[in-house]
Image (tube, rainbow, N blue to C red; front, side, top):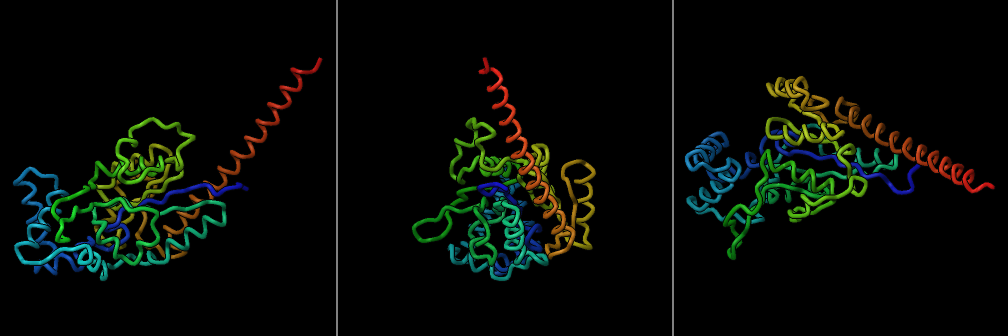
Length: 293
């Protein structure tokens, strides 16, 4: 058994991976007097008209729309927008259960979010307490407490840099260090000890990177929905290791697959330790033979 627990990272997208739909759709957009479909259509059209990144454009469009309607967006306002988030079955007791399962195998399971959703909304969610860190879009706030500009934007291409930060044990603002060389054995969480959970196209680069570097990528989909076809395509295109229903309850497919991966990681760790002991014995024997007259 390991003297100190081996770190493992479980990394999640948020919208349609943990929550049933986009986090902004529950309270935030309706509070602006709009339906989610209408808002996203207008925000995406504004982005196209201004050649803006779609995520950046939608963040700005929230500020623009709120000002036009005389609504003061504050950190507290965003946090309250999390109160009605609906999660897939089993999500809310998933984290403690999987963490405890890992602990029984001398694995220190750490949970992370990498999402194009808003950190200010996630901060008010019932599951925020379970995450070691959250890498999401975030606003810069002015003196009056309202957002003035997107401070951080997370889209499909920038998600991969946060995987590298987790790999190297870096914080979200340590941008320069993410490209500095670090020997693999000094990295706190190797990619092979990562499990990435996502639902679609914006997760593909992160899924592919995790899988290519020896970790596991899982495409989840809402049971009995059109998203199943997309998840199966990711599997057939070799982008992910598994395509499974987003049912996080104990005994379901997702639960069993993740526990099996954790079992494998613990076994591999134990085997590496046994091999290291044998190498040490071999080295001692070789030295003894050399020093004999």
